[in-house]
Image (cartoon, rainbow, N blue to C red; front, side, top):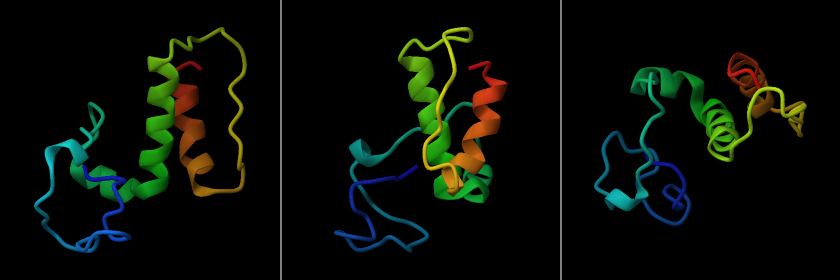
Length: 89
């Protein structure tokens, strides 16, 4: 998945169906998330999942305490509560 790097902002091609970019610009989809589901979830869902993955990679474990999701009115919050709860955090 291509995310960040200013594609569509600083570089042409943000709305293209295909793009030729540096491999360094690509982020692997999380295990169990296919391209179709990633498109359905959109930016908010992908961002929320990256946050949950960062918590896990940072060593946060169930029982460590509450997780605060700021910006509680936005789309990221809508998608972050479910995965956070399901992961046990």
